[in-house]
Length: 377
Ligand code: 9MR
Image 1 (cartoon, rainbow, N blue to C red):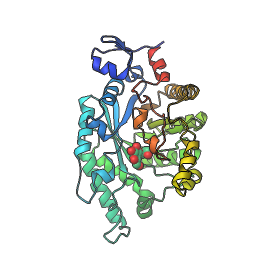
Image 2 (image 1 turned 180 degrees about the horizontal axis):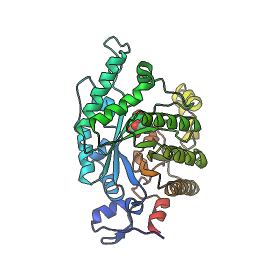
Image 3 (image 1 turned 60 degrees about the vertical axis):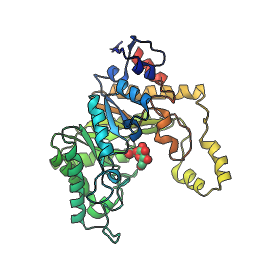
């Protein structure tokens, strides 16, 4: 059986990432285990870059060889007002990755969410003309991609462009520019850094209608002679979705476009799946008392994951990772959307205040058993 061992003598690193390791002992790392398969990435929040979570820092330095900005490269952060840029956090993020010799991924250039309020409207709040929006997109992309030219390996150029029914999301970009906004974004990004890899990224990529839509879009981009290197499958998954055969079909079909497949935002909720409109909608209308009662149904493990549920979670994650390994010739990166359960966005979504267990490391910074098993055998 394949075994890649990494010898580390820094006891501080070891203590943080593998509580049972002793100084001088060889430690198997996730990135090294998969080094012939794909990059292993993590989304990094600002507090991590600012040194406020040193244990997470140790984990990332030891086990990962790629990082992506969880929030600090989004439009509303980088250009909150027209022509006024805030670079501090993004600069620190890029330096963090460079200091550790990591593949740095930029997230994200064109997205309807976390979009600065001024970006698509005029001073009266009306949609700007197509020409103005094109110019704003070009200016933003040139500024951001240009600043990190040669340092960021690849960009999520367009994020979440397609609805679950396979139609275009009716975002301001689509409303003003129609389908053309996607090729334009790729064109501008390529002009700003011809060497950078360019990706399109979305959630629920196992959905057959989304799959078909993205295969069509990517083939069209290629037909137009535009650069696109990767299709990002976010992969915010659960214990009961997706069906792994549908997930696999997407990996295969996306790879058929000639693009790399990337698992870009992996996490798997251990909690009951919440129906957005039915459950979240009805909870929004509840009194605080009713809400507290309703939470019992959704926040089922506030004090820790029961052993049998933990086993189910680990078994399913092992199957998911086995699928990635099976298609390692198609997948170039597997990025978790965070490091430890305690810092995951899933604790606050779709219902705030839950205790979830979706990531590769638990709240005590220990590697989850399924992965420990994989890399130690
Ligand atoms: O993890 C991010 C969270 O901290 C933000 O509050 C949220 C705002 O939309 O965005 C989260 O990251 C999202 C990513 O940028 C795009 N795909 C979905 C991710 C989870 O919402």
